[in-house]
Length: 204
Picture 1: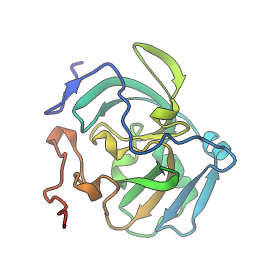
Picture 2 (picture 1 turned 135 degrees about the horizontal axis):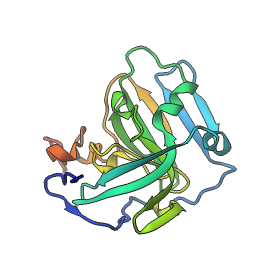
Picture 3 (picture 1 turned 120 degrees about the vertical axis):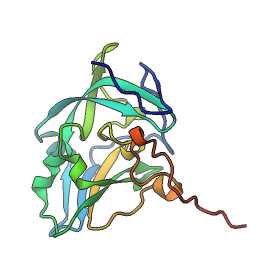
Picture 4 (picture 1 turned 180 degrees about the vertical axis):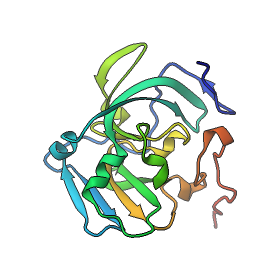
């Protein structure tokens, strides 16, 4: 099957490492995964509780806004939808923000996504991966250990989150970390939605 390369992208067999800030150092004693926002009751899950959830194995193509695309990486992780069992959403929840650590702040990084796009096997909080050059292995700290959100291939990779720390459920869409800095709210690589139509103005 021929893979579709989005416009402006080149194919790589490597998995490049790009991130903001310091590499998070996992500490199971202090780590938890928070489900909050427009829900009836907030929930925090320990690392052990998260890792006991049903597992999904899925092959997901990755497209980075820096113009590389990597096909056929297989991940093992926890599907986004598994977390919905723990919360009762308020009516009209249509969006989420997925959070990750940034320079010690567990909610320093965030990415906004439409809820309905995350119900399949291709929206995963991953901890293991393989490809044709690598056998199964844990993701490294630089790749987001212990848990990294990989979005469906219909979104640029910044819509994922390294060192994932929680999900906020929202009735209205709002920009995440890169969206606040001028990147696209929708981020479809096949439509080359890299940047927002507006660009933040710097005032001196």
